[in-house]
Image (cartoon, rainbow, N blue to C red):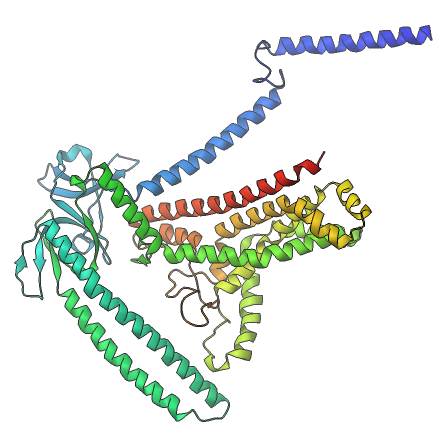
Length: 560
């Protein structure tokens, strides 16, 4: 026993000596051993510093990416001053300085007036500039067509008489506001009436074709109603053309820097302002006006200008449909795999397949959705329920319903995996306690397991939202379009039109940045759309994370 004690003591001393040697080697390798342990958790462990540095670099890159996108996106709506640049050769250029080129440092100036110059940008060598001034009377007009006009307001011309009525900015604003509130509103109401009559005519035409397909004659009352609707439509169309012609005869007279006279119809002018006379508070107010127009108006000029309301609406609707289809099926599948399926090679194969499905590119899901949903299921629905509309497809073409189902398939593996992880996190003794108290397995699942697994389910929901909002390749095949004339949800019965095409923020970014006929003019809108997409995904994720944190706090007391 004494010998064992001696050997044990020698072993204890040897271990202490080894630790002392190791500690000494640490001190020799790491000279800053006097620093706080809170700053240096593992002195001498260089791998920790490498990992911390890599994490810092990744975070900085993410912050840089977000900073560049949000800065350019938010600044695109800010009112910029208009400068008059005088050159050595005697020419003058009027416009916004948008930036400098990376190579020779030339100024990139937005001049506007596309119908006058043929292009909207000019590049100027700074060495050729003799003077830069900020004229206070210059006015910027935002128009429905041809982009912005930059020049001096000279007055207003009525009814094509050729006589220009001199007006100051306040008088012009009063005339323009009256035109928008009276004549433009009357034009809008006429358009709504014509749209409803057109829909009714289409409905009557389909009823007639359906009756002919069944070998029956159409009712005389339907024919009379169709003829009456046609006459009403033609009468409204004549009024519409006449009112539009009268509105376009009232034009604003604008003079460019070179003295060119530009006549812009008053009905085409959306907003106008004199940026060099605006203070910071006026610019902030106009910024809010532009932001509201951005989220409430429709796109214009081939998606290079205008608002993003149908784009935002389509993105939210797609995410909603994806969530409705994906989350319930994903949760049910995960519950079966974890709670009911027997262990074995079949279950392992299924789990491996689910994990592999999560890594398949989105374009593959798009092709599957096109073949199975659009051509297969959609074609069968058309032949069974809408034969009178053929060969024009109703559900046999891309639409928001098929896009939602395709995105649900794409995000389903993510939800299944996250839900299974949440179910595994539930302590075994909690479920055993519920069963011991007399609860059935279904009651335990509903009252104990699922509530405690909700944080994991919400994690899968967050991941599904972020992927569905950012994926573009699959929806390009199964329903998204550059311009959707009608929303999938409106006030026309049956109110939900899931066969219609839709617009998406991700596709709008691609279209504005790469497919626009005027890429440089559309680039600010692409940054704005990217910023909105980031804010949309971030807001939806934060809401889901908030509920996940609340649920986690609720059941933390059960975990030891």
